[in-house]
Image 1 (spheres, one colour):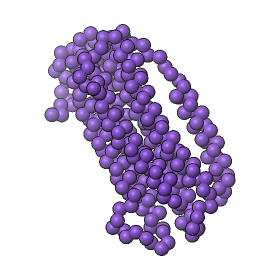
Image 2: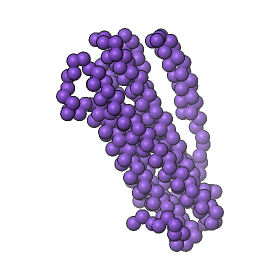
Image 3: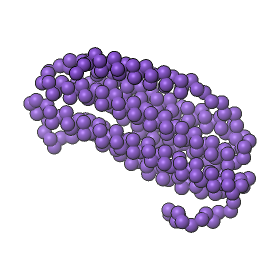
Image 4: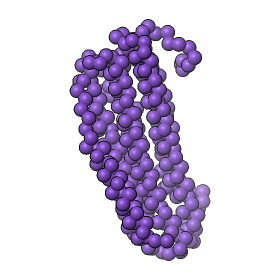
Length: 137
Length: 133
């Protein structure tokens, strides 16, 4: 399914676009892909900090309360953030190849399902984190 | 729905189809940059809040010596959420303007963010001086 990156696109030149314009479109698509990857890595890093910091604080609790086998709220939110980062990365790969084909066909569609998906994941997690910080003290 | 079924409009092709495509892709990157700003604010707010708990633990205190750090942290998390919500609205508005070939930059959000960041830096300095060593 994933096209061979070394193979030049066999699609006919995009309608109404010169070859150099098409090259710039593909490069813009690739930069967009990289921007998605940075966003995914930001999410994964944030999730890691949230999960580990919660664990660290729990280890300092005097006297120790919860059993170590039990996942804390911060660990759950942290893991959910990391999963959101992974889902965003997968969605961005699908988006990248769809856009690549559309550019070759000369009919790019400004889809926004990847952005909506990202928002649908991080908005509830942001609310959860805010509620957690407001309640847990 | 979600821009999936709609055929590309012709209105946004004033500069040619390739320019329209690049405009849309640049719009998505701008959305992602805003989202990262929001996530950074959420992360910073979380760290500010949890560091207060850490200090509390380290000093074996039952209550926080500086409850305002909790408020500061929570406010940053909420503000970060508002930023990425606003980023999505901005994405859709800009997307429509690109399709209609009538893009107008709206610097109000950028101005607001810069002012908030500058003021936020001041608040952080005041907070750090207040908390002391």
